[in-house]
Image (cartoon, rainbow, N blue to C red; front, side, top):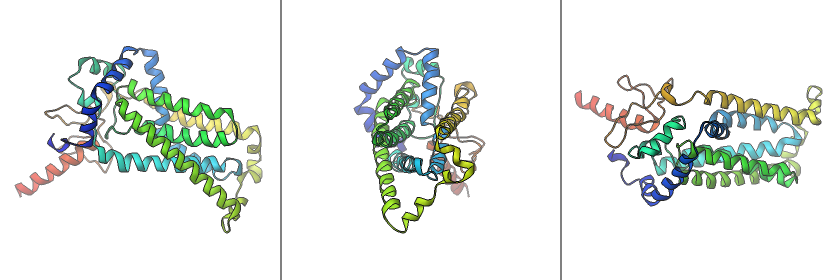
Length: 308
């Protein structure tokens, strides 16, 4: 795979190889059925099936005066983290997933299959799940801490568990999740301070002050949200969104997963193939992950031009 030679990802692989492998050994040694299910629970907190509905929920929180700053903080944090990780860093670093690059290590592959052979369709650094968990955790921690609520400490603990789950499931190097932690914290800080800016403008600057009157809790159908009913409703919604992401994850991976069709000299790709996606139609009847799709599409186009 000459197109991937001498990328930043390759440099990270060689520099931190011993560290990453040592951490994989630690998690491989503790593998069992209970921990695998637990890892899937925590990894859901960073999955797009949970994060995307959460950003919609965050927008809804903006329409209630008491939860407005939380909504702003979550929304800005998720947007910032997504842009930094998926738009800027992953395409710049081009780090291949460990279950592809470490196929010559028998114990690692045994641990990967033992953890359920989960996979993603894109690059590895930084961990998007870890970024998502920490961007939300940091934003919420700062918001709740500013209100002097002890529950604030719950969020970084959950984020750390999500971070560990990605290595336990063998889908990310330790350096990937450390990168995700850094990006997530930065994104959470961005979200929190932008939220503070928005609240300041709404409370002090015209014409933003008119937004103070926007409070759905004032309307009769939403009066119940002012008391304990509002807290219960938020908890129920978050749990429901989590279940929407978690329940399907129980059947992910394994032999039923549709893998990328790429077979190369360096590795056979275990990435999730992009199927049922009009942006990634099959090439010669085969489905590929994001990484190999663009490469093989261009090669197929060149062959087509040559034949003509």
